[in-house]
Image 1 (cartoon, rainbow, N blue to C red):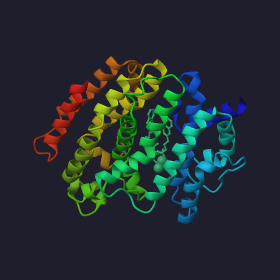
Image 2 (tube, helix red, strand yellow):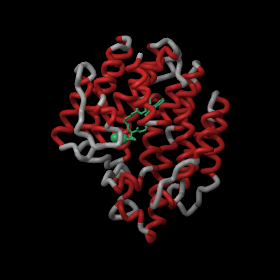
Image 3 (cartoon, rainbow, N blue to C red):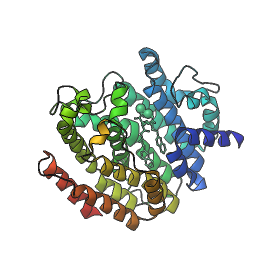
Length: 334
Ligand SMILES: O=C(O)CO[C@@H](C(=O)O)[C@@H](OCCCCCc1ccc2ccccc2c1)C(=O)NCCCCCc1ccc2ccccc2c1
Ligand SMILES: [Mg+2]
Ligand SMILES: [Mg+2]
């Protein structure tokens, strides 16, 4: 339909990477996944928009799942780059209401839970590694859980004994933690602090000091500790991918994960992260997309990057032993 075509345009404008992987999905769930993305991106755009007054933001986050059934609801007061999905939300919600009931229930339930979670963290960022897991569960773990529900309810995946909530959650935590680690400078410049205080306060008095050259050693030690924490999710990621049978679902799920391990490897012990953006090169990303077609190849990709990290672990680093343990544990699964 023309409405759905417009929604794919919104998807392409808000995320080229997720547009690429959603585009390749089985037609049975492609539209549902596109709308799942757009609804949550709209919700996240409210969360991220620092110009929205606090009490209004909280009201929007808690009501958001109801706007899915509010025929002409749009939000025109956002100044975010992704505001297009809020200004045209009525186009998105109209297509959402045409979805099969079983998909609508999954999407609206995840949307309600994510909105509640965002409210919980609207006044304070994650202070501990435990709170980081909680925040990442709300903004990304729930996406993995929702994706698994869409896969199983569509009949494309029947192995739902193995695709548990916990390992679905881990897929999201691995991606979100990689984003939070990589986006240190971008977030700090916007006064957004996702690196937990319980961690960075072991190394410096103020998280902003990591960008100063005289604190580069402490910055790297904190960075390596957070990367070590993220690596703990790799075994769940590999176990999840091993349980997928539909080829298009496999690629849709595997591609963001291989991008994340490649990004973590680039970030490991890399001081450039504190003064610029560390991204994997376009050519490397395209190679990874073409390579991540089955579990054997994905395991090889993970092995390659885990090995590169392992060779860069230095005994001086306080997390060295823990990093080595997480890398070896992950390599055993591969
Ligand atoms: O503003 C930005 O540009 C980045 O925002 C980050 C933030 O604000 O922290 C942050 O916003 C999180 C809240 C909105 C989540 C929107 C989303 C993303 C990907 C999807 C993929 C498929 C279906 C629905 C999806 C929904 C963000 O986008 N982080 C990127 C990592 C989150 C990925 C979630 C995820 C989890 C499990 C998955 C399993 C399989 C395939 C894709 C998966 C994707
Ligand atoms: Mg965001
Ligand atoms: Mg956000």
